[in-house]
Length: 111
Image (cartoon, rainbow, N blue to C red):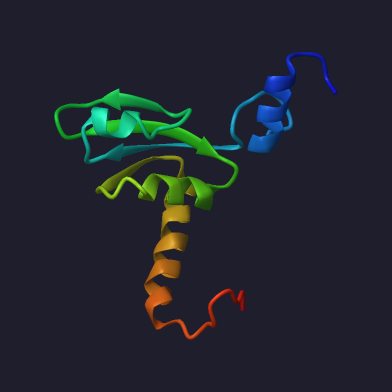
């Protein structure tokens, strides 16, 4: 194990980081929600108040799609600030979600 605190090492490995403690995928969005509604659920992300009904969320995850899915839980209009990989991840999820109602998969199947 490299030198340093065990907690930092474990946290970095969970995040998929090979160096440091940062998430490998980090992005920013503007949410159509007040900062106080987002702050309690932002995890280790940061929230900036942009007015009574808007805030900026800077967050990270182990993959772009996982980050987009985590942001989607806020059930609000979303404006991607960046990077482009995050916008692409939202498009991937949109396609998956659009196809889901017509799916004929058996529950639990991964076809």
